[in-house]
Structures are given as structure tokens and as C-alpha cells.
Image (cartoon, rainbow, N blue to C red):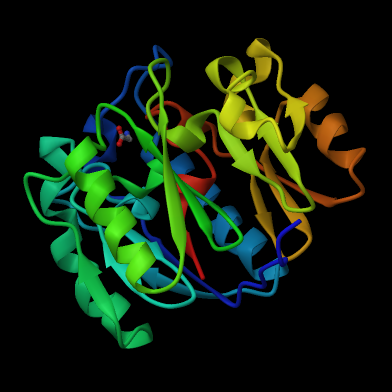
Length: 258
Ligand code: GLY
């Protein structure tokens, strides 16, 4: 069992109008921008109810996917690591996050090309980090990430994934040894030590939920997963992020929590 983290801050980025042209594999239609703004505001409220102080960054029209701010940095208790997104249309998003992260961190490291990493591929369990090798995160990027984490006394290991966008698309650590998992992650030997909370394929989107200070934020509209998590004794906070689902974005993608 690992020490339970406490988070005090979050960083989010306001969706840009260009989000309607964001990357997606979902066949759910284009997002409605006005509704996305409303949902984003509710998401910020939910973070605040979990006792987080939230820094809200302005929309960045150059980057349609920039509201998915989680992907551009890994914020650990010991250092910040700026990633190097593997999606070409997202690759410059990191420029605008570096000065913000420097406000909070003395130690700031960067993943360098040809390494690519998107932090949606990284799941924290105590001081260990699971790094998914995906279409966005390559071996070189993962190796750099592991070296940096080890330099600061943390550890990491690699998970191969093939079915979903990011590692945390199908996997969320909910503390107290509970691992919410779906699809290809249900039977991986790397996770046998955890108590798996199995998300039905019909509710796969809810496998991306987030534990924050004893509350689990889950996407609205997934009753079976809600009951599964509720049975662990956690507080539940449902947030409607359907406009972001249209861009393959989940709850975790919308913030950096540290
Ligand atoms: N639309 C989120 C992503 O593909 O990165």
C-alpha cells in the first residue's frame, strides 16, 4: 500500500474556439463550444470542492487540443517534467506551459526529441509511475522519463498498450490499492497486485476518473461505474464532460493536479 497523496493545486486551460477541430477518433460529432465552456466551468468548480486552488490559463487558439493540459507536463512532488507531445498538432503546446510551471517548481526538466511523451500516458501510484507506450509516447521518451524520475528518487516502468489513445484512457488509480480498469488493462500481469474495479465496455469512457483528496471525479452518465466506485467508500462527484468526450478527452486530461 502506498502513501495517500494530498493535492493542493490544479492548472487548467480554457478551451479554445478551435477545439472544434481537435484530434479525435470518436464518432460523436463536433463539440459545441458554448457548452464546452459551461462544462469546463463546472469542472473547475468540482476541482475546487476537492480543496484545490485552481490556476486557469487563457485559451490558446493555436492549439485545438490545448485544453487537455495534462498531456504537456508531469508534475511530481520533487520536480516538474515538461513532455514532448507525440501528436504533431500538439507539439508546440509545451511552450506556453513552461513559464507557468516555473512559478510553482524550482526543478523543471524537459523531454527532448526524438523522445515523445504525453502525460496522459503516465499513471502515478505513490512514488512509482507507469508509462504507457502508445502512438503518442515512444520508447525514447519513456526512457528519458524514467531517467529523470529516478534522478529524483522515484521509479517508473513501461506498459505496452494497443487499443486506446493514452494509458489513462482505460486505467485510473483510485488509491487504497483500487485500480479502475477496462479492456486491454484488465488482465495485465503488471497490475495483478491491485484490486481491479472492472469497468464494463459499455462504460469504457468512465475508466478515466480521477481521485482527488478522497473524492473521485467521474464523468456523468455511467451508473454502473459510479456504483462500483461508490462501493469502495469514496465520495463521488459527477461531472458532465460530454463535449470533451467528443475529442477523446477525459476528466484527467483537463487538468494538472499537484
Ligand atoms: N483530442 C485529444 C488528443 O487527441 O490529444
